[in-house]
Image (tube, rainbow, N blue to C red; front, side):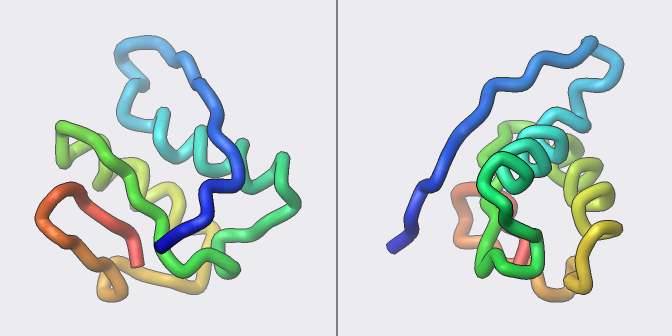
Length: 80
């Protein structure tokens, strides 16, 4: 089970669309005074794996975690 604490809508130019999940995650964390290291799991439910990988790269630069802690249950790509 999980707790959904918030959600955001983010718009970005088409050439930068792959960074939208990362921007949304950062905005939700900021609004709720949370950090990435406090998260057990961040799920990016995205149809294009490349978008998840680009966002994961940007997100993980801000955290002690890495992609070796990734988990996937077959429905999406999850970061740790």
